[in-house]
Amino acid sequence: MKAKPFAITLDVGSSLLNKTGSWRTERPVYLDRIPPCNNACPAGENIQHWLYLAEEGRYEDAWRQIMEDNPFPAVMGRVCYMPCEKACNRGQLDESVGINSVERFLGDQALMYQWKVEPAPDTGKKVMIVGSGPGGLSAAYHLRRFGHQVTIFEADAKPGGLIRYGIPKYRMPREKLNGEIRRIEEMGVEIRCNTRIDDILEARDQGGFDALVLALGAPSPRSATIPQEGEEVVVLNALDVLREVELEEPTAMRGHVVVQGGGNTAMDVARSAVRLGCPAVTVLVRRDRSDMTAHPMEIHEAIEEGIEIKPLRVIQKIDGKTLTLEKNLIGADSRPMATGELEIMEADVVVQAMGQVVEEELLSQLPGLEIREGVVMIDRHMMSGAVGVFCLGDMIPSARTVTVAIGQGKKTARNVDAWLAGTDYEAAPKHEVAGFEMLNTWYYTDAPRTVRPMLDLMRRQSGFAEVVGNLNEENAKFEARRCLSCGNCFECDNCYGICPDNAITKLGPGKRFEFKYDYCKGCGMCAAECPCGAIRMEPEEI
Image 1 (cartoon, one colour):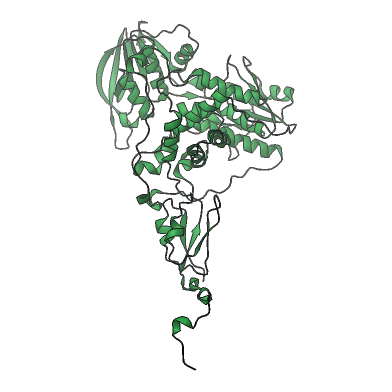
Image 2 (cartoon, rainbow, N blue to C red):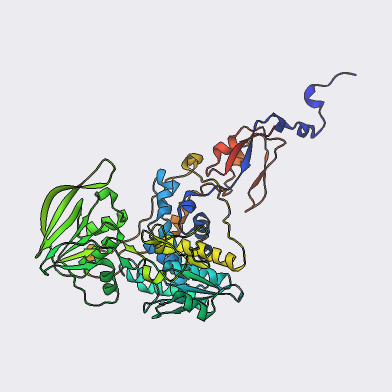
């Protein structure tokens, strides 16, 4: 019998029996990495997911995704200092995604269309929260979502804490704050204002509460004792000034106002002084300008509004209307050091914005609770040394921002919920962060960042109208589309098209792909050509 050419001796389909996967030393694996924006968000938002929903025009779905973690998107879109944007990988390609702008747009959409959140069925458990700042309100929101009955006790006439009484209206319009607080109340959270609690444990027991959350903030201002001759210069503290501005009460702000401090509160006081008509405003900072704790945006806008910032200066004494300042220099340990070199400055008002500490007298009644360096010590479950007493916000060791407090409110609620059930809450382990080096940026086109409109300078200096404007629907959607989807497959088909072995199967929209390892030789082309870093090559098990 005459032999046939080799190419036609194989039966139809027999080439599929040649399982070339046996040659492989590495295998590709689909995985979900954490986008750096998600990883950096103190509130724990799934930013990448809600940006994806927003770019599809599914605004309510995007808002509801935010509300899984943060009940204040309209607030956060105005006062958050955007650690997510600092971490955004796109910032190394052109400019970071305007995450904060899109969140603000979604928050305002929810207020416009009155979207609601429904609580879970009632559990019968009652939780008492003292303090209605961002941390206390966030904890109340999440506890109500779990189905617990929540009552907040607030000493002030209105809820909101330092969002209301510490952030001026030009940054945080009150109708937005009120709208997002009202939504929490409509879920069934009771807020009792003008109700100061003098005996915390007695109030808890009389109310029949099963758990206690303290969100008292740090209301006692730190101050430096400045030797003063005469009474020509009025010395104030920043929180009192900002409260008077909020309540539209007469303030002592006049003439040349000098603000002592380098944080965001100092910027808020200085910029409020401009709006109150003070002709000259100076901020004295003990540290170098580059070490100021105020957000760069706040500093930039303050300078635009005519505020002078003098770094490395400390007030030594006040004599009549004359301030004697001592100059500092930065020492070898990067800390400011006194030089003995003096200069003088004329002033009418000095405002100290040097931070705050907790109200220790109120907390001293709680057995086991420990206060160290002005803050309350807690364990990893947000519980203080007093059993069943959870603490959060500015009263515990942490960064003092609205975003951090909101994230702590969620974490506290989860721990309280577990404690009420007799268990401990354990957070799920985090995945690997998708770094810029894991992306293939060749596939992404340049897209300039959408800039939010700003109020003109004259109007900014003459009143408390909101400074920063909003995106419209068109550019909010465009900004969401700038997201690179770092670390998570968005089904671009690159891996499917590039595979030389046809070893990848499409599973259908939203289901991604599957590797056929029998035929994958482990060449790694899929991982190399994945734009978003959703494929990793792993050593083959022997």
